[in-house]
Every structure is written in structure tokens, then in C-alpha cells.
Length: 367
Ligand SMILES: NC(=O)c1ccc[n+]([C@@H]2O[C@H](COP(=O)([O-])OP(=O)(O)OC[C@H]3O[C@@H](n4cnc5c(N)ncnc54)[C@H](O)[C@@H]3O)[C@@H](O)[C@H]2O)c1
Image (cartoon, rainbow, N blue to C red; front, side, top):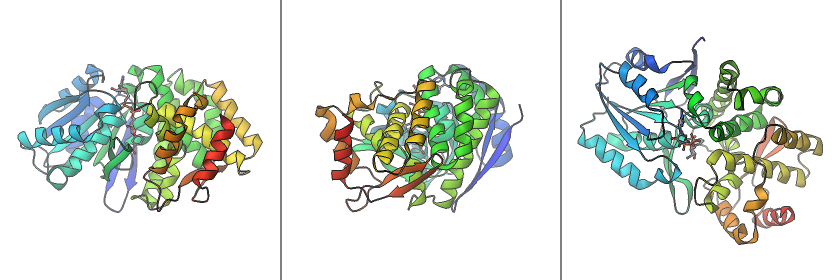
């Protein structure tokens, strides 16, 4: 399979995303080609990442002084304490500004490593090797770094673009099915917000992605997603406005994650899928999305067995908590709730028009 090279351009940085099969064995070559002064490399990973992937990467980095830091997997590790530990580990090991941290893992490892790399000596090199579908199609692109706080998800973080992203599709074969569904959430999101033709392509081919893991179809969906996301990020790196479009489904999604206390009960991607469906219903409820398009989206969920039962999280005892999480979402400015709504498949928009009272009224109709 041919390796593709996508270029992301932001105000601060221009970097490559390499997408292909079996790329990890050439990690050292890619690094040598792009950077001259790296001596030390810190691989940050978590204990669920298949050892074979780490072995391949380490083997290709023989020329460098390479050390590995293994985190506990899962959303609960995404906190400030981990950043502190990681920064101290890097300083103790004498990393200089031209040295490099490589994240090998999903969005959790990527978000943590990017944040630490940004803070250490005001910014050391950061390479991202995403190994989940979700991180290959979304989290590794765009430079958002973050940890969670008790007040909500991703509320602490920075913008720090990676220097290189290596997306090796062969890593996907080790993922549990549930993680395939999570990654698919962000692929579906990209199609719904920006690209009708891509949605209909997915409607026809999602089985080959989620269930069969066909490398060619996966590659097409990954590249298409990377292109949609990098186009948005290039226009609005710091999320002043347009980038919020990528938050489609996430306002409710983050609230669902919040009320389940970021537990394994509900993964990020599953929460996003529920959030997407809920916001599609909200868009229809407010006469923005036609019943025709809403039904096509609902059928897509049914056809590919995507999680769709958000009502279980909207029960009475959760209701007020959901509202609190929506209010504290960081995209809100001056008490106005920023929502991304959809008016057609492939066409979404950002609005501050809907008050908490209106959102509450809608949620009451769904429970
Ligand atoms: N920075 C961004 O722009 C951005 C965008 C979207 C999501 N995110 C963040 O990303 C996180 C979700 O990322 P995720 O879904 O990748 O979750 P994750 O990082 O928790 O990974 C999911 C699980 O899969 C395991 N895993 C990773 N690669 C594997 C492989 N190849 N084979 C087998 N197991 C593997 C992990 O160890 C983990 O247990 C959330 O914290 C979310 O907030 C960030």
C-alpha cells in the first residue's frame, strides 16, 4: 500500500501526517529525514498498547537514546498529576529543547503527551503516533492538548501542534470492536458536518470499516477525515469560531461522559455518537433538519449497530447534572450556549440562539 503524505498548515507550524500500512518499522527513517538535532527520545505510551508496536518503533530508533514511560490506560489518567509526573521524568532525564517526546497510543496518550511537550522548556519536539482509529482520524490532528478536571472534560490544556504524525493503519487490527465504533464516531461526525458525498459513501461502506477492517477502505476514511479536520484547523487554529464546528455532538457527548464519571461504562466515542444523534433530533425539533435527513441518519445508526440509546443517561437523577455540564462547556462565552446544529446531511452551523431553557424543554420531550 502506498504511503500518503498530508500537509497541515497553521500559523505556527507546518507538519506532515503520514498515512499508510506498516509504517512503524520506518519511524527512525522518517525522523531522520525531517529533524536533524534529536538525540534523546521519550516514548510515552500506555500499558494496553500492543507490545509489538512499541518493539517495532524502538527497533527503528536504535540510533537514538530512547526511553519509555508507560501510563495507566484510560480517561482517568488524563489529569494534571500525570502531567506533573511526566514533566519531572523528562527533566530528570535531561531532555533538551531539540529532543523529542513521541506519543504512542490513543487520544488519551496523545493529549497528555502534547500538553507535557508544550510545557517542558516552553516546548520540546512532539511526534504523535496514533494507534486507535479515533486518534488517527481526529485526536492526532489539530494540536489540541488537554487534561480533565472535576469541573468537566478537557478544561485544562493548550494548543500545541505536533511536529509529525505517523498513522500506521496496521495498528488498528489490535483494537477491540468497541474502539472501532468509537473511532467511527468522529469519521461520521466529519461527514455530517462537511461532506454529504462522504456520508453516503460511509452509508454504503461502513461495514468494511467497522466490522471487516478492510485496509483500503480504512485508509480512504482516515485520509478523508484528516483532510476535513485539517481544513477546519488551518482556517481557525485557536477555535475563535469556525473550528467549533468540530464540536458537533460533543456538547451533549461530554455531558454524558461527565455524568458517568469518565468511566469505561461509556467511552468518549460512544458518548459522541449519542451526542450526535441527540443534536440531530434537537435540530429537527427546531425545524432545521428535515425528517427525511433525520431518518436517514437514524437508519445509518441502526444499520451499523451504533449506540443510540441516549435516554438512559437523561433520567431524572442525571437531568440537572447534564444541564450543569452543558453550561460549563468551554465553548460557551458569556452564558451563551454555543451549539453546533445540522440543517442538512453535510451542512452544519454554529449558533448561540438556543437558551438553556429551550434545551431543557427539548430534553424533557425526549425522556
Ligand atoms: N486533541 C483532540 O483534538 C482530540 C479529539 C478527539 C478526542 N480527543 C480525546 O481523545 C481521547 C479518546 O481517545 P481514544 O478513543 O483513542 O481513547 P484511548 O486513548 O483511551 O484509547 C482507547 C483504548 O485503546 C487502547 N489502545 C490504543 N491503541 C491500541 C491498539 N492499537 N490496539 C489495542 N488497544 C489499543 C488504549 O490503551 C485504551 O485502552 C479522549 O480523551 C478525547 O477527549 C482529543
